[in-house]
Length: 300
Length: 300
Image 1 (tube, chains in turn orange, cyan):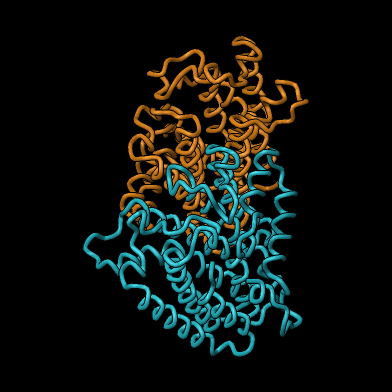
Image 2 (cartoon, rainbow over the protein chains, first blue to last red):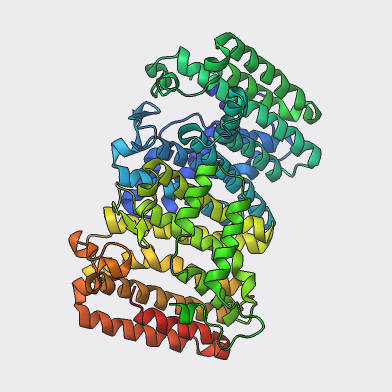
């Protein structure tokens, strides 16, 4: 993980050396400063700062840099999207949802505290994401634009969670179409949003924003197929969360529909496409090329 | 209810005839147009459009008019705050929280559907509130300012829910101070936000915004004391939700701390204060005066 997400090799003036560390420091400070009940603050800290790959903030910061921006310009949306991601994990883990005991190798928040606190801390993390954007970017047109990207993607993600766990997908669609609808909403929307918010904060023109959007869409789907593959090929210990859950719950997955080999081919195809659409951005996109390759071969 | 919240008496050019009806029509259209899984859309509709006093949207619209604005300019924040209010009710009613079966005289959403859907529909309503603001107000400084008001108040409300149900209030504080901390967060913040958002959308200057803020703070606390009083003096049938819950749960309340009579005196004091702070706004604030009087004597 750290070799790609924390690499300082090829560091330029406008490059954040370690996006994961930078966003954690930023979030730590934000959560410390915002007036909150002590128990709520602790719950938010537990869920937010207990490890994690920080893929989404990294993607936001690297996308900002890929269009020629200073990566620090994307810190607010990078932190906000991690708040959204962590809120979704906390709610997804609840007994009424996936009922998971383990997350990032530790007890899930509702096991560490209780169900009521996990519901409220999840709610607070979503709300804090939007407060953070407008606190840090001010009452600006940029803040409104970023808020709109983040809110739309958050709602698409929630819709994806409904599709995945409660149904609602067009019953006439082919299984692979249903699966793509689920993935595009459940994980794709938020990952795509990371790239777009980063690019917007970096001052992207239309062509650059389009390139980043296509890249992030490809990487988002690839990420989920890799996730599906890891679920069937890795152990719970390796993942730090329950393995083989998808088959246990009868969920639609890429390996379930296409088999492991064809799923791996699809990963390779999306990887190639992601590299290709970055072409117009030249060397600025080096970190995004690296990130794509890392995500294609990650083991957890 | 309808005599005050829907009154068309004294209707001026810039006055919304029936804010409750207008915001319901606005929300109905918004929820119909936003792409969502069918089951999620139905759950949101059930929770959002199943009655309710629409106090908060009414306050936003009337505050806009009270500073000389056209009430329709506050429709987006009025609708957004109702989404936030309804999200909080859905999550508060969950078995892990207050465990309520009845809301507005009908089964609560988790009883009507299931716990997972209620969690996700609540999440979606919060997210849709922020998407609505930036969809309808555009990528503008106004949208960013309104988003900031709404996000801050939402987080204060969530903090208030934690204070009320899970603790976290300064243990050294006097009981009445603890109670005020709870109320100021749990209901006060969102009600105050309604007034402020409305006034901002109406183009309020600093003096006007200050008057509306003081009014909404007084009315917000008054609203909660009346709520506490209704809980001990009304039946479940009259309220459309469980009565006598506060005492059953050993909660701090005004009648519990001060007794019924002194609580009523506090209502009268706040009512007088709310009227007084509106003085600089003149006749434009007539509807806010009426709203305050209605809220002081409401029976459910």
